[in-house]
Length: 407
Ligand SMILES: NC(=O)c1ccc[n+]([C@@H]2O[C@H](COP(=O)([O-])OP(=O)(O)OC[C@H]3O[C@@H](n4cnc5c(N)ncnc54)[C@H](OP(=O)(O)O)[C@@H]3O)[C@@H](O)[C@H]2O)c1
Image (cartoon, rainbow, N blue to C red):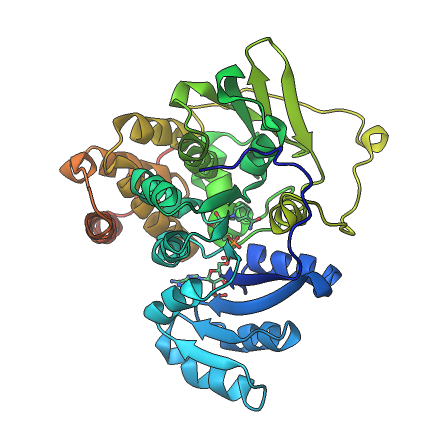
């Protein structure tokens, strides 16, 4: 599924036709920034967004996209108006996003946030496209099914998440039998040194103040709870076919070493780079070649030191919960992901406390929902919807009794 990283510097065919799902987001915009550095190499087939039609139209005009799609039908009028006279096709609705992914681009950047990215990303997989996978939630939510579809349709998955991209690069074509384990690094987020009491009082603004990375709100909160690293363990399991015990997490506050591969002879290969998503994005856009980027270069002397710490499971229970969901398999990761998405939304809306996020996920994993074993995409989507409904009910109940944000 993941191609051999050392597939050689065979000249890719340029220009490459590219579709960006989630073009208005942090990864989507970074993708288009890389494209703008060398515009002759890319033709933009389609760009999609949720409802930020004005921003989508601006990007579509700037990059001469053929098609622009908003998932929210209510944003269609604004999109059409903003594209008037441009010759760019406009469309709206979740089905139109799926259809955008089906259009004949060679490379699809899957950068929608959350399980909303699942169906469009699968549509790209099912036509055998090369998919740059930023959207980790779709692999968490429907991992086994997703991996099966990739294999059935001979699609190629290229990891965009910086840690997985680092592992992909460090594997460098080595046979899988020589691989002992991988190490994913975590920045530790804004609460790396905070006590449970401080975390219990955390506001959305505090949680959104990430020390190293500028990302969308959902992944930034996931980073603060370390659920992001939990989701990444599940993502790595599916991408690299590794047992959960062979995926280690190490806190590395400088976010310079992104991922490491430990081989059976004791050699460790790592990928380093500045904490800038344009680096893994450029790697994926040009794979198996490379693009020149204007990203600031690492200055190791100025950096001076690289620190590593063990994660603290008592302050960051989300990591343990994700490992448990992965070990249980079936629908447990689907439930973990769906409940986390709703809980993060509720936290950002000021309805629950920061510690309630992991607590709600823990409660959900103890319900019969987490024991369901979905076998088809429809069953995954049904379970995802049921878990969301359960969470909304649970959080309303918690609100009536006063959210118990205990330390
Ligand atoms: N940001 C990073 O540095 C980073 C790094 C590694 C992995 N990732 C992963 O990449 C994905 C995107 O993250 P991000 O930080 O770029 O997110 P983001 O900034 O919040 O952007 C999300 C994108 O998805 C669109 N979207 C949201 N809900 C949608 C829906 N229901 N249907 C269709 N489109 C929808 C948004 O459109 P609107 O703008 O119209 O709302 C936007 O274009 C996530 O899975 C994240 O975990 C991100």
